[in-house]
Length: 358
Image 1: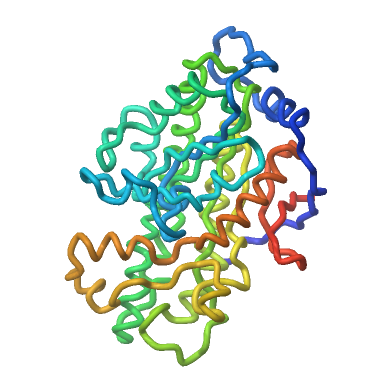
Image 2 (image 1 turned 180 degrees about the horizontal axis):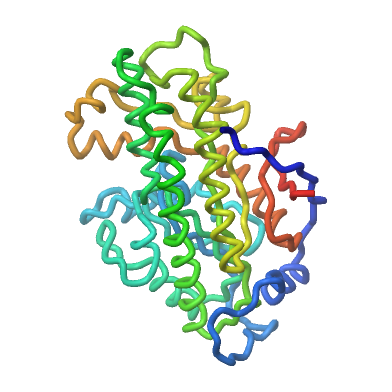
């Protein structure tokens, strides 16, 4: 059953100058009570350290598929975190600089504290403390959960397998019945990451109202609006499966992430509809905001791509550089507006803007 969508109201566009940014840094999450339980002094508003925005999370935040990757994350020494200069954290107007700690393939354990190593890198929240001591962190974004129980990559493979083998059930049938249970399992893990972020920031001398903490959901990559007789290259999945993903699977995942935000006092920005009308295979490639499948679908399903091929597959069905720019613009409006939750929705001006529930 498709979740009902709330009525949305546009947040007015705010032009944020240096003075307004100071307000963001010290008071944007007044509705969120401190979770540390310890008395601390707030970071002084005249803190001379340079303001930064920090992104934590998986490939959706790192910029997988958005273009070239930063040196040191292209595979050197085994590091395939694939952090792109085009990632949204580098394109917001919330601070002079973005710091991208996200890593392709990371799950909640690897983003949180004590979860081991991902591509040679230690916990993202542990490194957040280092950044917060060096710089003045005004906002932290967290986009995680896709690589835990929801297993979006595995779900995509199930959809592709069904398209290549028409006698097999579609992924809406093979995966759909387990979706609610998967989301129920990942919700507490995401809440744990938020608590780890709060603890990491507290260890650097911050209280919760010193910075904005925003959980983000994931943009639906495909749509049933693609041509009826499309081939196996680019978007090898059926239109009914694409409709299920767009109208049920991704909205339900967003709802689970939104619930985790509500339970922990974080703010929530729903990205489900960011690429609406610009999904993979719905128009000219140059106009799409989601990457198409980048590998041979038969080899993917057969498991014969090898390690290099699977890393190339990771780029598939991820936001393009244009999409990251749109997300950054929406995030830049949402944070200073001060609301607890909103959805990034395409508008007539060609951009996406945050709209809040009425």
